[in-house]
Picture 1 (cartoon, helix red, strand yellow):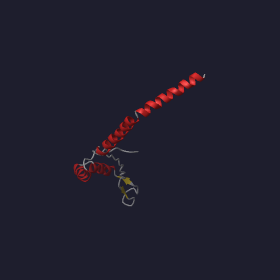
Picture 2 (spheres, rainbow, N blue to C red; picture 1 turned 60 degrees about the horizontal axis):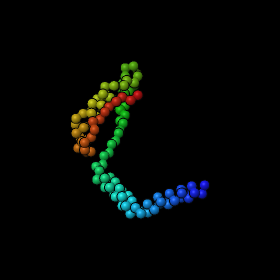
Picture 3 (tube, one colour; picture 1 turned 90 degrees about the horizontal axis):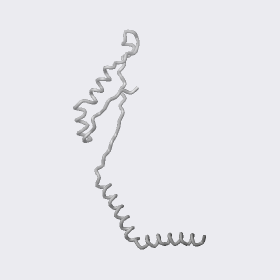
Length: 110
């Protein structure tokens, strides 16, 4: 049993000796790896993304103006708002202010 454990200890010592002998090369390669990663991260163009949700509540006719004294929602107002948000002039204004903007997508929620 003792020969086996001493053989295992000598294997570990051999590995440590090899590491000690190549320590300078190992340190230089590690430093070069860190410097390369730092250069790549600093030189890479930053890219940002964002998402926004806009809640458009339809205009309501006050009950006092409605012939049946009920609230009437105007779904055409929502479509008008959607067309306005996705229109060319709004897209151009956004592009002027924040650069190349993605085309907005509109979907119904709920």
